[in-house]
Image 1 (cartoon, rainbow, N blue to C red):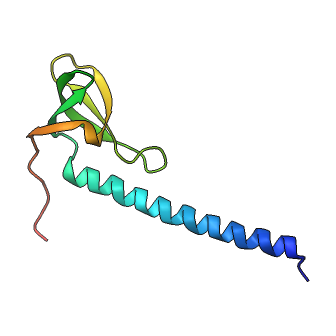
Image 2 (cartoon, rainbow, N blue to C red):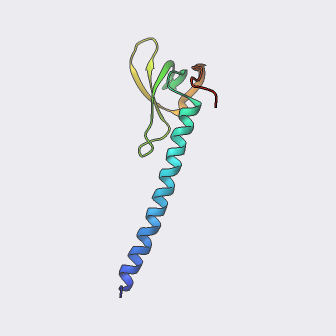
Image 3 (cartoon, rainbow, N blue to C red):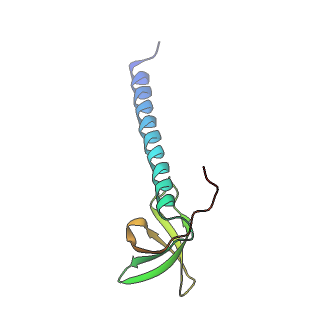
Length: 102
């Protein structure tokens, strides 16, 4: 027979695991949405500090760190930059989706 403390610990652990799983699923969806809206190869204008910088997206964030983090290369300097999806000022050029008809 389980003691009360063991039962309570198990119930709390299950709740925490459930919360974690829900958060992870939401983060996975967030990454996929950002990838869909701003796919790799998209050229964007980003507000970085006081400057507007044109970047070409070359990577997206990880669900367990920051699903809204994006990486890109500065078009003028070739320097790699990381930024948040909310820093995007405008989309300059978006690649045409490739793939067959579904």
